[in-house]
Length: 187
Image (cartoon, rainbow, N blue to C red):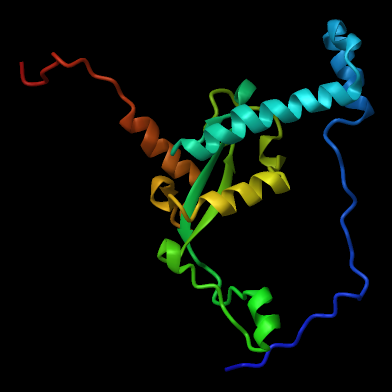
């Protein structure tokens, strides 16, 4: 067994400056495009956006295997399961408690990890600079996925760590071809 050195929690840390999607330029553009929203305060608009994302988008992502196609064709978000890629997945809480390096083995999910995937490769219309976009889920969403994933991990799509996500969606779109019940290719 390898000894575990407790990290110094009092050392200075670097934090990335936090950027909000709903800053002054967002509200300026919103009020120009939709003048009827001027009657709402900024805090009310933020609350409406947050409630919509929690109730509609997050619940749909968690409860459906295929995830959600985001509005305006900007991409798709889904939860996938994949095998542990890195060799060491340290459980820091237990390691500090016992003084020995303890690993997460994910026994409840047969070694599968739950990951939140975002892809914009197979949208209907190409959007300029979509390759530069990034999706960063909120902390509440990540914690909710971490809580729910071990309960029904078999429901989610299994993604191979070496494949492109776009390959999965191409296969899915091929399977979606609808053929009427009375169609017979041999007649």
